[in-house]
Image (cartoon, rainbow, N blue to C red; front, side, top):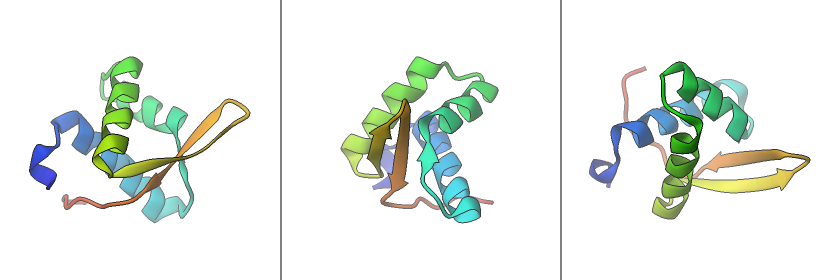
Length: 81
């Protein structure tokens, strides 16, 4: 199933996975966007990618409140740490 992921989708999933493993909490959209901007990926591209990953069942939007959107990891991918 991982074969249908783009490089940008894989990058986002790695960011989410590392956050979940290190912090043991939900990851915010702003954190993901910041990390992707550091990789020279535009914020609107990251938001589009997050929506695609939701549709594919890799992540879920958990809560949207006080201008924060948080995501839950539903499935992991294999990558080199």
